[in-house]
Image 1 (tube, rainbow over the protein chains, first blue to last red):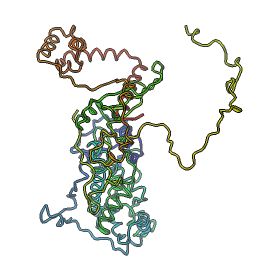
Image 2 (cartoon, rainbow over the protein chains, first blue to last red):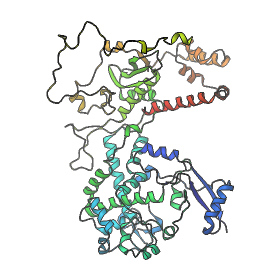
Image 3 (cartoon, helix red, strand yellow):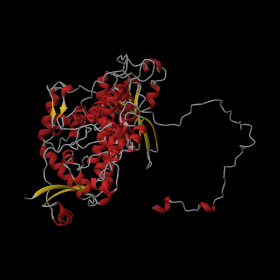
Length: 418
Length: 180
C-alpha cells in the first residue's frame, strides 16, 4: 500500500529562524521565507532520501489538500482545550475540579530531580522560590505523554490561562482605546508561540536529543535527562541524519500549517513555548497567584512591544473625521500647512497639522502635500488610539488584580465605522 | 542648453577665505560678549516631532487629571496663528442637494456618460466628485473598460517606470503605517 507523507522542503534550513519578539519582524520573515510543499509516495522509510532526491528532480505533484489546517489564533489563548489523547475524565463538564487524565503516569521522585544539575541551574537562574520543587520543574520540561512520567499538559494550560489574563488586563487597562486587530497583535507579541519559545531559549533550556542507545554508550547518568526538554520521540532521536533543509512535518505541525503563507509552528518552538507556560503554571501551583503575577510582569510584560508600529490605516482622513464626530468635537477637521521649504526644488519638505478649531491633533512631515497631510492624520489617529489613562495622583492606574482596586481610567468605546 | 546652466569657471581659481573679511572684527569687537553659562540642570531638547504618547487635549476624556494639571501646558492656537497656516484639506458637510438636483444628475449621466463625466457634473452642480459617484453609481462595463485601458498603458511601461510605480505604492503604504 502506498502511503502519502507530506514533506516540508525549506530552502532556508533554519526552521526556528522566526524567533523574535518584534512582531513585524516575525511577519516579514514569514513572508520572506521561500517555502515549498510537495507530497510524494514511497513504501519504506529507508529509501526516503533517494526517493526524495529523485522526486524533487522529476515529479510535479500538486500539494495534497489537508483538512483543518488552521493556524493557532489569538482567540485560542483564552480557552483551555482538552487533549483527548490523554483520556480526560470528569464527573460533570462544568465541575473543573473533577477533570482527570486517565493515562497512567507517576511523578518523578524529588530525590532524583535534585541530582540534576540542569534543573538546579534553571531553578536558580529564574530565581524560583524554595517552595518550587525540582520535580515540578522537571515535569514542566516533559512533553512526552506516554513515557510514564507526568507531562506538562496541565501545567501548561494553567500557565496559558494566567498569561492571557494578565496580558489582557495590562493591555485593556493601559490602552483602553486600542483597536481589536492591534490588541490581538500585541497579545501575540507578548505570548505568541514564537515569542515564548524565544524566552525559553534565553532561559537556557536544553533539548534532550540523545537516544537511549547513545545514553547507554556514553554511560550518561539517568537523572541528566530529567533536566532537559523532552519532546522528541525515540525514533526521531535515532534518525539524526536528516537531509539538509528537509523536515518531515508531524501531525501537530500540519495542524498549525497556514496554507497561504506556508508557515507552521515547529514542534521544537511549540515545545519551548509549552515549557515556559508550564513553568509559569508551576509557580501558581507552589507559590500562589501573587508570585505568578510578579513573574509574568518581570519576564513577559517587561518586554518592549512597540504598539505604535502595529497600526496600518486604510482611509485615515475619513477615520479621523469619524473619531472627531464620535467624540462630539464641534469644529470640523481641517488639515493646515504649518511650514514648508523648497516647494519648487526636487527635495521639498512640507509640515502639515491636523486641527479641530483651535486645537492641534497631530502633525506630520512629508516631501509632498499629500504625504504631509496623510502623516499628520495618521499621527493624530495613533495618538488617539494610544491614549493611556493615569490615576488622580499622576501615577500609573491600578489593575483589577491589585488589592483595594477601584476603577480608574476609561472603558474604550470601540472602533469607528469607515 | 546644458552649457549655459553649468558654471564656466573653476573654483580652484578663486581666492580662499576661511571667513568673510569685512569691517566687523569678531575677536576684538565690543559686541563679542562671552556667553554666560547657566548653573545646574537645563532642559533644552533638540527640535523633534511631538511624541505620539502625549495625547492632544481634544482626545483626553473628561475624567482625566491631565486636563486640569496640564491646563496651561496645552497650546491653543489664536486666530492670527491659524490665519498664517493655509487649509490644505477640510472635512465639511454640505446638505445642499435636493431630490430634483439628484434626479437631474442621474438623468444627465445616464443620457450621455461620455459628455457628462463625474468631474463635469461636480463642477456644474458645485458638489464633490465623490458625491456624484455615490449618486450615479459606476457601471460594471465602464469600470472594466477603464481597467482594460489601464492595463494597456501598464504594458507600455518599461522596467524603470514599473519599478518606480511599485515603489510609489509601497511608499504610500509606509505613510499609512507612520513609517519612514
